[in-house]
Length: 388
Length: 165
Image (cartoon, rainbow over all chains, first blue to last red; front, side):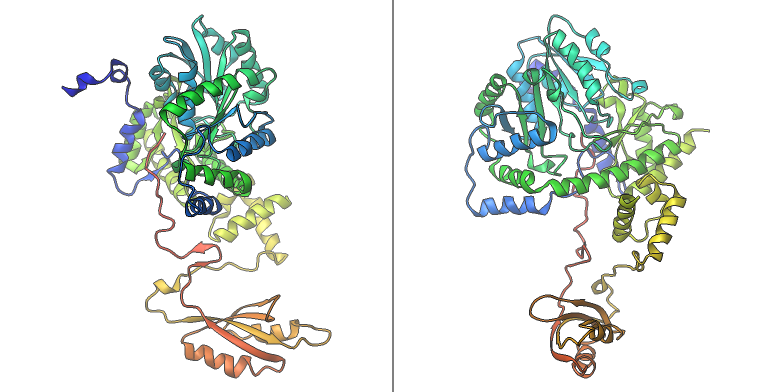
């Protein structure tokens, strides 16, 4: 009845495959979840304290639409120090409600009806729906397991049409943990430049690269003017619930995004912005400590998975491993459902992140060593049962 | 190797029961290398022992009190504070002794069954030592955090939703 009021665009939108797993897992007891896409650390105390303090001082009003200037200045310094990209804090930085809002704003700011956006899968579940909601058309391309889920420039190029306006990439990647290095990004940038495209680069995991420092595609030669760099505080600073992200890019695009932001959001939460200021000023030690701990757990999990026959490459970043489950003869949904029922371990089936994710599962290692150890034992039992 | 040693020490400091095999995987060494490293660190007195952090206040049958005692002493020629410190730390009821900067010299942590036990120790054993000038005893009322571990039952509860993108 009242569903007839819902727009056809939203009606055709499929609910995320992750939701189903959440419902299943949360009804069971004694579940170890490797399905959580956020840090297991609580936000560093100095950040929480700074936010408290701002509230006590009465900073409870709106900030400028683009965010506190002080914060934009710190973001600009931070990006310059760590990723060698230069943005003017007053015109090229926008503070958003999580990186998710930044992606939404970017797409809404640049898309005309039926413009195509290339989405590299496997990827975060919301890119394609966000493209569609912005009136564009998502064209997916598949990064292949045999290439450690690194997308090849030729694969990108094959999907380009006259309607293609932008490409969304994410490195370090959720769900594969794959990191594209400078050479690989440069090769993709060549294609982007040749076809005059824009890149929306989701760099939310950029701090969490374990083997070598992550490169921003914006730092590749001649890319700064065609890259929208999306990042935030959620993963590196363990601040997911604060909902604070930021986006930087060419002045005109950031101004266009700010226009949408001022009408639809006004500004990001003030108390969260004050916390973020402290995170950038005094949070680096905490980030490094968390990083060491993630790396140790990554090594442990990758070793355990390969040892039990679920082969996976060593992911360079984020906190996910994306092993193949083909040995078991199951598809990823079957595998994840049975694993949950029989061994009470929750993982996310790879197909929810895109076609080429089929035959894989996403395991997050952002959980305690004790839980990881136990989950690997349960997983091993499960795999042994279904392989000879 | 120095770097791996520090990584190993930090892991063991946090969890003394972590198995060598697990540590090996975490820090990318072989199990044998980890065991050799531990043996070496023990020999070099870098690892002094392995203990368990007990929250005694959750063990209802157990009675015990802890006091922190500030001790002022007269340092002795040529040995400074070391002599008096060693006379204090040899008492089994003394759990920790630190030489401090500031208003007093030694900070002494003492455990006993009852407050009476501790008072008796202070008045009969500690304050009667030759070079001790004065003592101030503070009884611990509640332990909130010890050696980096928060003594609260729900502090380490996972507050995240079970599955998220």
